[in-house]
Image 1 (cartoon, rainbow, N blue to C red):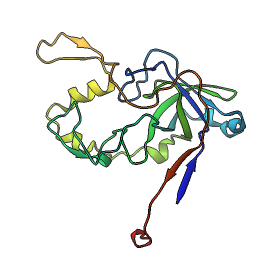
Image 2: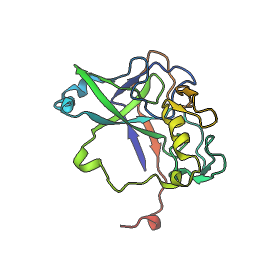
Image 3: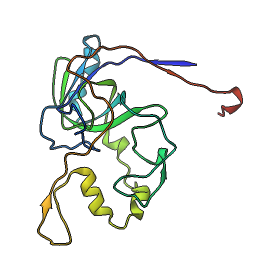
Image 4: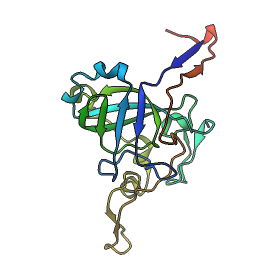
Length: 204
């Protein structure tokens, strides 16, 4: 079975090389916006009534998928791919939650997003608090990290102090990614994904 995704637009960021963060940074410097193809502009009606949106995109520079990974910031852990946010997936689709700052025509100005400039935009969905906020959510295997708070601060690029001296504060905005790097121009070519499924493998 063939599944074809047609990009609905392009994501614009200040990241052109290995300088994209691991997670969306709300206060990241630079300009971030989504350019939606003109034929989809009508679909943006009332989107400005939401504060946050889900942005789905194609990780077009991702490497071959792996089944297990060892996070560089937690080398003592080996976890399954689906228990991670690694970009090297069988279907390299990325998901980020960002804040909507302004919508003008077919362009959506957003807060920082963790992709390279020119990443193909696949879809936009509203973040609905009453539906999407899970009060009993946990952090999975992150909860097993000895220095969880410090490592999370690094991942999120938060300013924090190191326990060694108690006075050294810094932020991290330079984590690298391997996806979505383009030049300023970008064509909306169809993205084809071939799925192999045996009849016996399908269960209702």
